[in-house]
Image (spheres, rainbow, N blue to C red):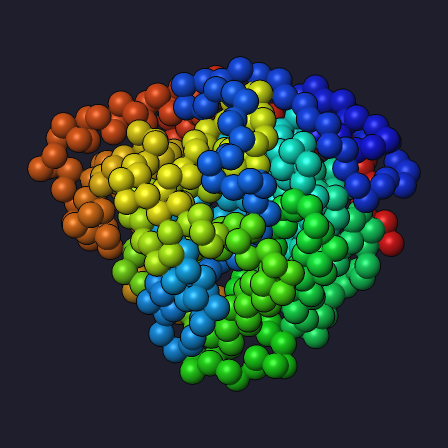
Length: 512
């Protein structure tokens, strides 16, 4: 990663970043350094998808915040309707077993945009406003991959991968950016934070602060503003390939909805918020249709992690899945996923093969005819799954789930899910929160590895470890390989394949 004026030099940490005004456009030049490892994939020049299209597709990636598995109509939502998302699924494909790499904000987004486990790029948890870390400048983002293939790249929404100027989206491959640098609850009105914990919440364009200190009224307009920006981006770039990343702040608490959707659902504010997100999807699909881009655009919809269950009616519904955000049970990791590309993705398809956010970078690179990063990544091409091929299989032997301070808490391979010994939070038996104030989690502990058959037990209710010792042994061996590569704080392992995050010291904040 680099901007047009200066290259950030990194050792273990970045030195003080040169102050001054920086352009809103990041350079298309790519940097990559290291070779691949056992869990990663080896780079190769990916074949241009001439068999798929005479022109590489535009890509619109819509990424929500804290949306639960059953928050979309076609995934079982009750109390509100999502006609545009349901239409997207009817005209495209639903993936019923799509995972995020970690069940929380920043780490999940790092995996999405780098094609790497977040542990590999050393982004854990949710970065606060004062954090001096983010993606290392040598990491190659999805935006940079698309940019070097000739795509215009734009982002509207939540970034959450570093607030200092050299870590913002326009220095990570995006030509333009409009949105919040981190979660919308990281502001002085947080219901549990002490006074002075959080600074005023800024709205940023490029690397300039448009407004420092958003109000409730401002937050109520964010979904509309992101949608308007997305539509205008499509209109400006309708004549050449583009990559558009729309990262909604909603339905993360504090919930906000515009006046046009207030009271629209039968389930209160949360349902109203979901219906407005669905409206946003409809506006984007409508813009594509108006400009004749329907059959030239792949649209993907998913979210960063499961519901924040302590917020009660201000949280989503994981449906049959266990637990939610902040846990490595299915409710924290498995997300609704819909992809639509008329003529290329088989309409009305449903795929039950597992896949993960890390797979989107290599898949989209293939479709764009772009190079993969030369350093290791963990994702693999899942185009056969996305296209609706009924014979497609997951290319991974296993997926690994880390949380907290790089704790390897779970892994899944085929139908099996192994929960490793660790402590997790739960709302079971606890009074739920209300009116935007969260309830209190209690802690529970897994003392011995537990095995679940997800094909027969999607809710992870029955531990079948004693009945399948050979499966447990195989998955424990895979876990040990992951520890060697990615580390594991639970067993005091560092990991030989872990790369440092980007760090800045005395970096300028976004300017007013």
